[in-house]
Amino acid sequence: MMASEQMPRKDWYSILGADPSENVSDLRQKYQKLVLKYHPDKQNTDVPAGTVEECLQKFIEVDQAWKVLGNEETKTEYDLQRCEDDLRNMGPVDAQVYLEEMSWNEDDHSFSLSCRCGGKYCVSKDEAEQVNLISCDTCSLIVELLHHS
Image 1 (tube, rainbow, N blue to C red):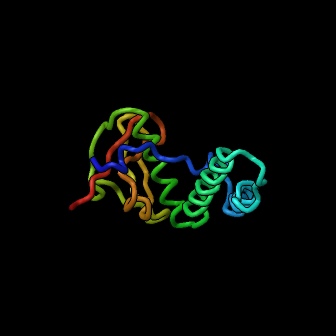
Image 2 (cartoon, helix red, strand yellow):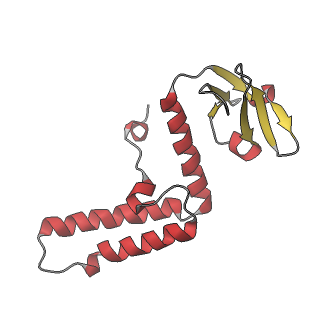
Image 3 (cartoon, helix red, strand yellow):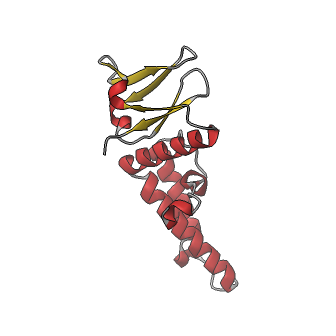
């Protein structure tokens, strides 16, 4: 396991004080407000050095959060990873399947697989390239999507 995988993942949404359902325009407003608040040039010169350092660290975190969430591509990738992390925490994987084992639905451009509960595991064509775990739409079972090497 690489060192980066062992580190806890930052919650970029909480750093911006935002909700994952907010659009990029809302995220931008929160980012701009925080950048003005924590920008090093905006700090009073008479505050303790520790406070200045805290503001600088917060400013850097806010900037990092915006670099991820301010770009549609990196935001989508981050959101998919968050979803997968949540699924991983829900419980063990019930089965492992290859994409080829799933049924293709031309209407909504997605792959699906029936669950033993009667529900379905569904994943869009775009998501199939990026996700490893898929949850059933009815129960709490999870399957791992295997990719050919």
